[in-house]
Length: 391
Image 1 (cartoon, rainbow, N blue to C red):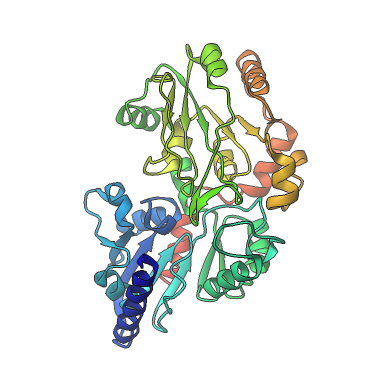
Image 2: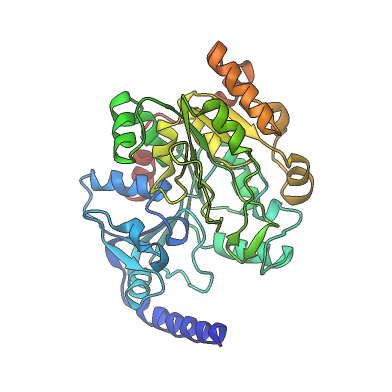
């Protein structure tokens, strides 16, 4: 009954959309969305904030999912609820859409609208048409690829962080329109705010101790571990007791699970040592305050590399992930900008060595930086705006 009602509402909204889209475009109207309306973050946020500081006269709205309304209680931003009549009206009349993920597939893009797709990461794992098999709920390999390419056919502009990404995006998204190879707008913050004053300010607002080092653990999701479509499981494989015993005097750990992960973490007994920051407004602030990143196959490490700080890769299931789930675009085990570890004991060993010897970037780390981060100079947002909104 619930699904049937949802389909009826969708058909109604689509009909309203088609009717409104016949009205001439509302010039200088931009609609922004990040991670399906769950966050005020990422590349769309960076572009939005740069537009606010520009001399361009745009009327701008942020789309939010009603379940994440609290994330948009921010001064001076105009918001509209996803799937509301006002949302339909704005989407149908906007001159520009800006998104870092996929919009609802049933929405037809009006001829007068330009769609700027920023995407949300430099790819390690295979994407879209490059995926051999899809293990996600509610779809199959053929359907997933068809739907993805139907979405990418609507894009007018696509942002790329580097030449490596550009080559993959063209093929994986079968995209033949304009790619803006600018660096990632979201990384402007890492370049421009990388100072002790900004770091301390973020810690104080988040009620984090100033006298302890921070380990950020930011893993990705697993396609085949899920509760339902769009709601993924994640099993924390770390031995927190061991980590607490060894590091609680000098460190705290911030957990940042992927936005698709639905776990409610029970951290009882680890108060003051482990903090769940999965719902923190924007991961860019967590990058900036972290002294060490632990991740796996998430694209977060491409961004964190801009800070030239140490990274560990906790890849306890790398054979399964590499060979059966996604596959990688390059030899991750050979080219990762930090050690690969599979146990908590190995994590402790690597961090202990960092404490003893300090962080000494390897030749592999320097090579990685030159290949993936060479465009990041704090001006990527400006380059995108000049191409799309001033062009």
